[in-house]
Image 1 (cartoon, rainbow, N blue to C red):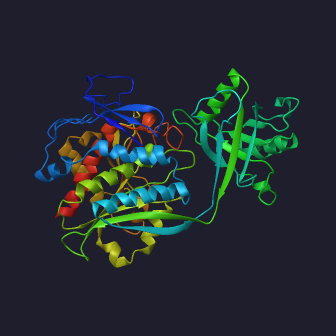
Image 2: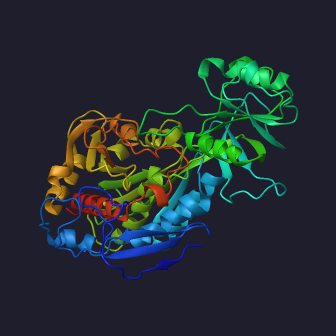
Image 3: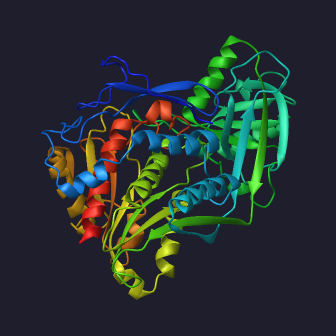
Length: 483
């Protein structure tokens, strides 16, 4: 359950400023995250004609732009983001958590009066772990309750509790005299992973937690499901989990203060069905008229709450669905929320494969939103990413909106890059592009919390950047659809 406080606070800068003019300013929105900590975020409070944070000049809005911008609310978008990333949390393709998110999104569009459907498709099995503190033992922080990856080649659907021992690199000399029944922490090195697990099993360990190697700064390594190919036909008899860089550091900090007891559990998720959520409002041109699509993926990688990747894009779609529901357009407005993007664009590719050529030909442009709200200071450029590197209707309309909003210098040239759902459409000749905030020099410069447990609202969301993203996409999509 989320709660909101629109208390007005003095304008000020802080260490949580967002770079290039994005600052904690005017109002603060306070939100309770999943019944836990309360976080205050700066709320956009500019008037339609105000110069936006990070922009280079005041906007020159058309009357049609104003129809959209006047209704956009980052406060409403945040409510969806809390539900997705904090109440539901990691949304793993095909699992119950992803289905909960799909149902929530579908209910939202149903209530708005859209024609809403779930499009199911099968996906591969998933293997997850859970690390928590048992009821007994010394008092530990309540937030030590983590989803992790689990090895498919080790014990599954099992739970063990044991004292923790850190054997560092996992050499025989790193082991204490007795690790029987204990949970062993071992540094992960790819070419030694099977050897160190075998050593732990031989020593009588109850479970193994492999600790992610540090990623190259400023990035952080995320959770992972360790592969043990040599054990594929003869699984390791104990659970083997893979934890993120930040979790590794946390576990070692806790061990440094005294004994540590953990419960580790593993789950095999099999026979899975993922879903795309499709919602449309027919335009004046009728059933065979043109279509404008606004899209995002709503799933996450294992262990990541996915606030920015891609809860932000999903919340953008849900809020623009509310805004555009009653504004007449010639083209049909269709929203696509893709399942199982993180496993290889599975949902969007399935959707495109099911479209007859005549239906593909109706689509004027697809506006794919993936990571549109990071608070990372260096992410000052809004990237126009095209799979073939060429300008198209989607990139051209967003660039035009950026000029009207005063953002042109902060918008990238059309840049070649795939790896998001726009690629599925461009592969078959449909105009599409991916839009997101990233580092100035390259679209490869992603924020440190990317694909990690730190991708939370508190750590990685700027409501001001989200508001600007909604204005850019909302005005661009409306400009495409209204003619």
